[in-house]
Image 1 (tube, rainbow, N blue to C red):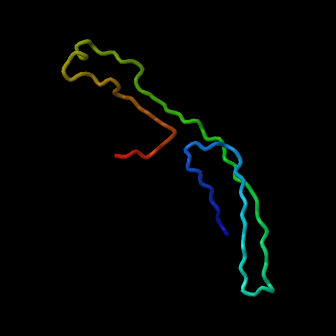
Image 2 (image 1 turned 180 degrees about the vertical axis):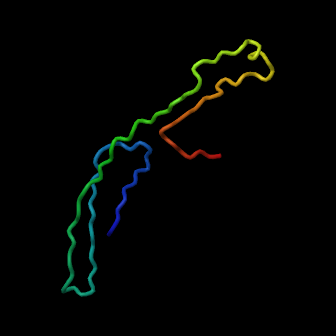
Image 3 (image 1 turned 135 degrees about the vertical axis):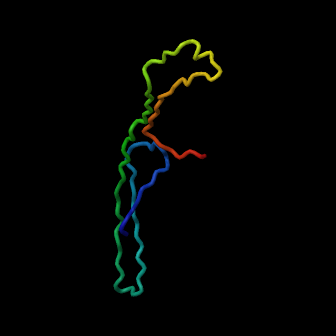
Amino acid sequence: MQHISYLNSRQFPTPGIRHLRISTTVKCFNEESCVSVPDAEGYVMVLQPEEPKISLSGIDHFARSAAEFESQEGVTLFPELRIVSTITREVEA
């Protein structure tokens, strides 16, 4: 065995220790020289995930004449709005 992986499918797993035991069975062709392998015990430490953060930024004031608000074209309310999230997730088209 060369590589072992731990996968938790929850987006925000509960932090803590996950105990594990690896048991091995050896099948021998020659019963006289068969070996036994002791169980190996260990753990995986799941750390506390970072708090998700969403940042909104843009212009700090929005002054326009009343005529612009009343026009047929309207006014773009958030012309420079920028949204940044520390969490990404695939979204269906």
